[in-house]
Amino acid sequence: MTTAAALAYTGHTVSCIDRNPEVLYSLSCGRAPFHEPGLKELLADGLLLSFGGWEIFDPLADAIFIAVATPGNPGGDANLSYVETVAEEIGRRIDKRANTVVVVKSTVPPGTARRVEAIISATLETRGISTNLSIASNPEFLREGTALYDMFYPDRIVVGANNELAVDTLRQMFTSILEQTFKPPAPVPRPQNYKLPVFFTTTPDSAELIKYAANAFLAMKISFINEFAGLAEHVGADITEVARGIGLDERIGRCYLMAGAGWGGSCFGKDISAILHTARQFNYDMYMLEATVKANLRQQESIIKKLQSELKVLRGTTIGILGISFKPGTDDVREAPFIAIARRLIELGAVVKAFDPVAIPSCRRNHPDLTVIYVNNAEEAAKNCDALVLITEWDVFSHLDYEKLGNNMKQKLIIDGRNALNPKTLIKNGFKYMGVGC
Ligand SMILES: NC(=O)c1ccc[n+]([C@@H]2O[C@H](COP(=O)([O-])OP(=O)(O)OC[C@H]3O[C@@H](n4cnc5c(N)ncnc54)[C@H](O)[C@@H]3O)[C@@H](O)[C@H]2O)c1
Image (cartoon, rainbow, N blue to C red):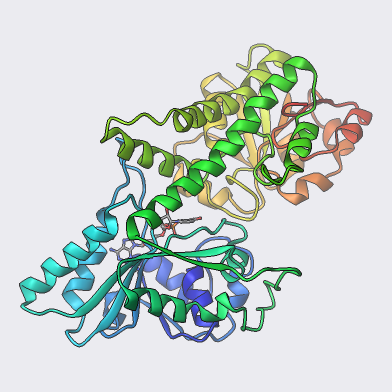
């Protein structure tokens, strides 16, 4: 959706095809079907965007982006059935006069661009036609919550293709982003000192692997600082200081060094599983990735341990949780640490109350079995609780009246799972404060 919006904003005519009528209805009413800052405003900007089913497919389009989901199969490998179905649809509908680049934007394991090409060619063969069609891999690096910013002001655009036409078409398509010649959209101003992005071309296999390596590295960085956070608690150090101290080294960098309740989201977990699955096909061990996942599970469990260390038996306690989405700025709850933590608390016999500024409807929809009591605000989450746990660092949680909140709690215990709150203020208000790694 963000690719479509950015391409339309920079002057292209874009048709967005989806098979889900609810998604289409929402978009045709100018509403994004998920929470993403700025998207609604951009959609209201009169862009050359249309929404529909396969009937709006343009058989002569210059480029066709495949951006469907690639969720994990139970065995950990990427489920490529959506990508393959779309490849078949393209083969069935493309015009023989087409001069098209099919761009795989979904996160897919190496070899998938080749597979997409083979499926389209086989389908064209059954139609008895051939076209001038090329394939490119163009992995997506956006972060939910800042998706438009990342789309308009990327660090790099990676294109994997074996053919000049594909590279040239994509370079041309992204020219105004590459050269920053567009007028910045109101909701996403251009940052000062922004450097033009690199247009990085490579083979499809390498482009596909770049995406997995990027996500695995970011997850590993978070797991790394979380592992040190656990040690910091033992030795009496402050992980926020440690992170600042190492992040000032440009070789390390400051980003993705925030200790907390663990990483989640639609991508890190499933992408690490998928690439581990690929490695296993070659009997190749990826020790660091296995440890990245293991450390993350321990990190989620560490929140439970902190509660147990103070409350002892959790059966019969009531725990208030602030934050459900896997990060602020989105209502995405896929693999959100909240889900694992809430499930474990319920398993241990606690009653869980939770509040999130935007993610309650998507949590209800995606986890109907989760017996959490959803409440309308942080005050209700805290009321009569034995402990309050912050899991998602929405800005609003930093500005609550904790004095008032504490007075309505059974016990003034707060676990700050993101080190987002001010410990001094909380301690002054009589709270027992526990952060992560400090
Ligand atoms: N969400 C992110 O932050 C992000 C970031 C980088 C890369 N990616 C990758 O982008 C891809 C899409 O992710 P997402 O989060 O947008 O997934 P999503 O599930 O939110 O959206 C995919 C859409 O594809 C539609 N679809 C599925 N099969 C279809 C078909 N046959 N015809 C038409 N429409 C079909 C679905 O209805 C759905 O609306 C994945 O491979 C993901 O790994 C996502």
